Image (cartoon, rainbow, N blue to C red; front, side, top):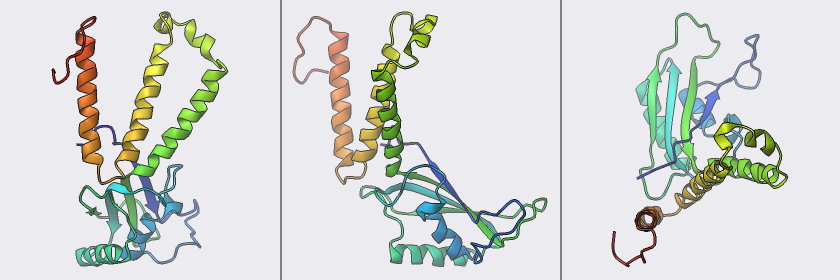
Length: 210
């Protein structure tokens, strides 16, 4: 059961200049488009997918597409192992076909959009936490928050938010392991025991009691 891992990165190919000219990309067959969608240079999020693995992939292919070309492309992607998936779930790329809009003129026969859930996005959150810690250690911008009624009782919400992001990072890292399901069950048991202790203040926690 995936709890928090719902942060997608997107890619689009081929990209064209404003004047419609594109000297870098010439071939727009289904295979070329689907292959380029898996390349890190086409990602629109600041994280590399060279490390980690995919949790899910959806390719939306627009244009003059024969379904048999999609099947052949998926087979070649599997043979070349161009996409590494999580070891505990299905390794498949979902594909949706779309017709070109009659109102938008494009120079390409086929274009593609990818929406993917990849474990490497935890590096993006880790950088955000690192920057947050630096600002928090310097008490930067803190006084402005203290003056608002929302934070009149303290800045505990900042700490809670940091814990949420840290747990998200840990879960994305854990999902790269074959033991992710076991890790998730252990996290649920730990959360249940913590909740039981909070419901019984002042009473000793009994092992095995929920």
